[in-house]
Image (cartoon, rainbow, N blue to C red; front, side, top):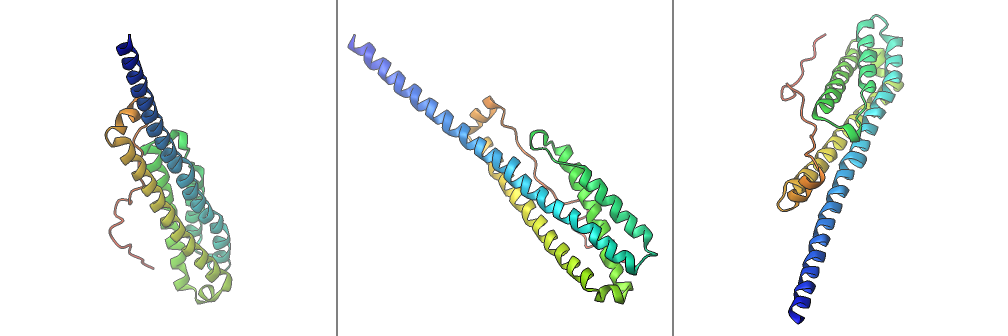
Length: 197
């Protein structure tokens, strides 16, 4: 009889230890997943929204000085509209959706680059205090976007490493923790853009 009690106690201890290990791994994966899908993604979207909010003021300032640059101004407005129409949802974050979002933001960056380049043709615009302030805010926002993308990618990397490491990958597979996608550089980003007037 005493042997069966010892065996039961040992099995109970092993079961408790196993449950504790599964619980600990599962909870750490949940924390990492939330850091990616809630915090890092939210910060990233906030930085992109800040840029989108600055654009109408920048366009209006340029309009006053460069009214015949209608095509460039319309391109910025159109790109902004497209970029703000794509929202990333942490629950349905697929690689395709991330690429679509990234492409729309890339188009907006390109359009903004053309808008900022206009200042070279308009000395009065370049000297305008509102334009300079908006340009500085936009540059700061671009830095925030870059920082937010880097933090997002770091959070995704931490999560992906956690769910793919043995033996935690067993728990990840059992509970459906899937690998997440990072932001990647746009095609051609390794080449410096050419600005022509």
